[in-house]
Length: 223
Image (tube, rainbow, N blue to C red; front, side, top):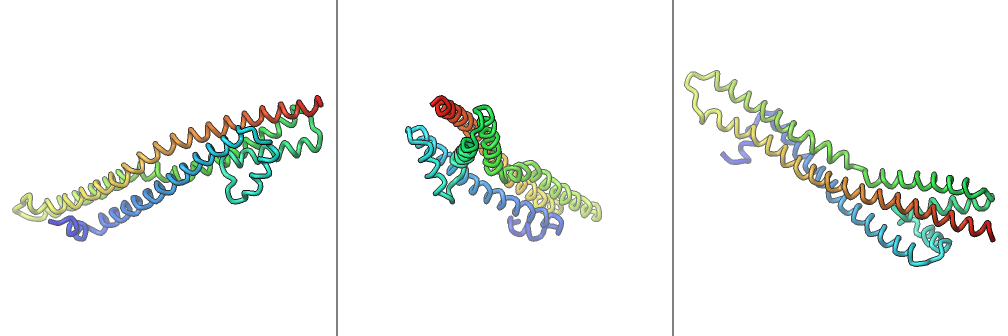
């Protein structure tokens, strides 16, 4: 009995289960690779922008630099752009500090939520694959074993050799379910932790920027 022959000689339903699990495994690995790149890029961009932000650069100059990078405005840079553009708008209409601060915070809160949604995208797919793949594989296993025992009951002289191929092909479905589920669960847990850390850094930056803009607006009003 070879692995290939067990797969090809399996029942149609078990083969469908195997195809579903193989497709789920391929999809999960595509998401794992893409999210790895996205999260690494988000972390690098956040560190690079915060280094530039705290370097003492004039915020108006930094805002102009961010606006020119139309294809690279993500993460902290996008939050900064949303907050500072709202600050400029409210400053032009000469609102008081409390109204300005509330407007800036609302703008940045929306930007933070959008960036969190971007980081969270497709993680639910990994969670789904990790949770249901073992059950799909188990369904294929139960069906294959049931089919083997039904066939065994139709003969007078039964032996282990008669049911071994059917049981073996059924267990392949369970193995494929675990093969699809384990990497998906590990990747989901790891990426969810990284997304939480990035989300916390986004929220902290938004609070710090709001405080800086409040102080800057107070200084302008006193002048």
